[in-house]
Length: 207
Figure 1 (spheres, rainbow, N blue to C red):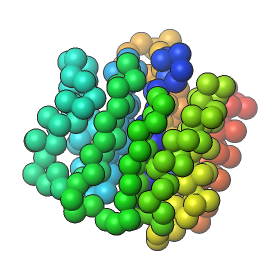
Figure 2: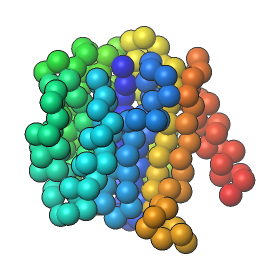
Figure 3: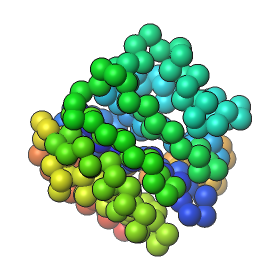
């Protein structure tokens, strides 16, 4: 179904989520982030409400692990969810429900966590994190995109990749009510990861 990465920049100024999927418009429900709070990817048989619920709990001082645990306690079908969380301090957590689509995997890396389900290769999450770790100190946003490239090259979604998204938050001149510095989506494409990279290059050129 979907593979994603949640991450924190080395200077702790940015939080981000990058995701790709065989489903339509993955960016409309999987990635969630709030500056100074954390980032969440909620997928598999997705409950998109878990994103804002976890962010609210993080903002109240819950750790990534405890926020995830408490949010899943409210979910009627936690066994169908796959979720990754990172908070603004760099604490990470993930959940693989017992009924999420196989193959699936998860990996906790340096300043990141990666998850995937219905993926060709169970090592994809680990490979995503390792790719991110090599680059994020130089270019956080591009490192998120490279993690998707790595997953795609290893086979990605078993159905083929059809959509992708990139969400990055940081402090902006507009205050806490608008913190999105990058919010790009490819809702349907035969090559969504490459198109997402192209969109980001255009975004940088027009800033």
